[in-house]
Image (tube, rainbow, N blue to C red):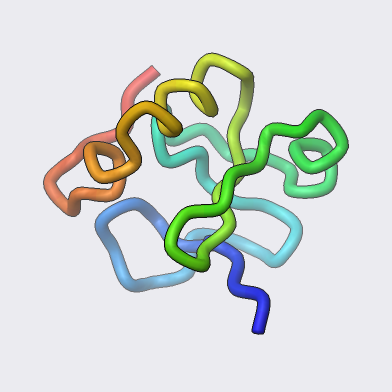
Length: 76
């Protein structure tokens, strides 16, 4: 089963519609289709995460746990 992240960081409620997600690093709204086309997607523990840009994707890849911690507050 393919799981996709569509949750607000640190919250159990859906963040937005099926075509958008929140970048877990900076909190920006990301179009899933555009992010996928630009290879701004990462898988972690069976979940798919979408990013606004390469920098956020690289930061997440270095330490996913930091950005998935419920106490983390995304900022640009």
